[in-house]
Image (cartoon, rainbow, N blue to C red):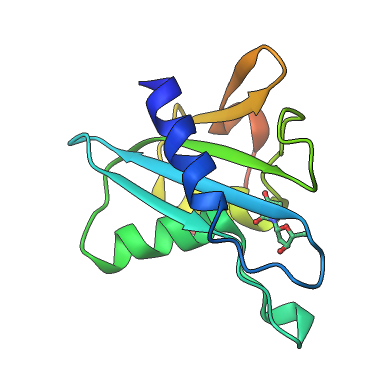
Length: 129
Ligand code: THU
């Protein structure tokens, strides 16, 4: 399953719109029911309007009524996509809003992939609830 979602993330990366940074990212979000939603990073001339691949995938899924998430695979880089692309702090915070502490974060690397839980990457995160 990890390899399947990683492949989807790699394919989603092909749609990355990143003419400013040239850093291309794809993400594939695995739902509890086995469905997969993908995303890519989307930049804008006004740079701060940029949305990361992870949040595109999450927002697509959430906007269609989904709320049970198991894992996300992330593939990103300039040319070398075997260097793990760690999710940014903003994306970790959004994951914490919608995903359980044992939500898996799967990153493509030289050996295939490496895996973390959300609670490992965002320990003691802020939540209102
Ligand atoms: N980016 C992502 O899409 N996901 C990450 O995990 C890190 C950064 C994007 C945002 C921007 O378009 C580009 O990569 C460089 O920061």
